[in-house]
Length: 292
Image (cartoon, rainbow, N blue to C red; front, top):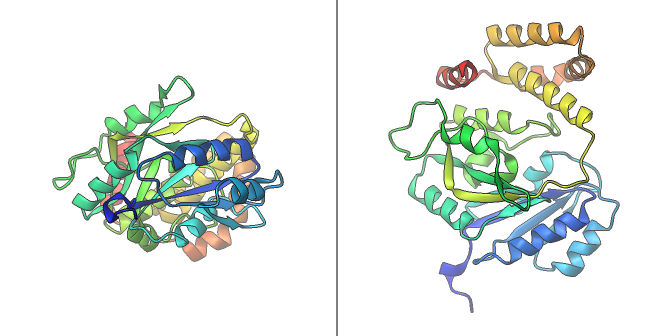
């Protein structure tokens, strides 16, 4: 019988849609880790046989079939099916290096205020360092006296490990943003509740970008929409006015920005319901990042 010391403290949640080949590679890589983490796959309405492939090839995986595309909110569904203190996220085209999850768990065990670990990401077969690694490593945010790593106010979802209790307290990703820069809102909500986010450069995640990706224009539009919605949801009024004015000016000549504005305005009733101001200390951190 496997001893308790070999049981992973970290579950992995993977959300997927119509990328069965990439998903099977990711699940094979996760299965090879020692200790192998419990894995939850949430399928966002795939039509390419993804659920059948998971059931037949990876019976140890917990499979949740949404039946529709829930976007990033599918991660919340996956987290609800875990029973470990920490949860890592992978996309269907990303996975974790050996010992990465254990290193993240060690850090979370040792630092009770640490709510999220932002890993270093290596891209493609040649393992190129993602530019985000340098941004996170050289964060302009003042270091925290109780944490030995650079503080962060952003992360890549496919390269993050969260404390389950912190994630639940912050409300997870939610359904408003769907996809595209959704990490910023969760980062702010975690920080607002006193949880720290840190970059751990010794925790590594692979990313093998899928060739099956949404059109770039669609993603850029959603990213612009979500950036604006995040400001409307959390930032102080002067920032809301400034960012909205900038978007209006850009929208005069930029079709994607005009479309993003229209999509954002359609969400105003939900923004009004869900808006809450960030504490001053979090606003100061964001202002520091925006000045650089």
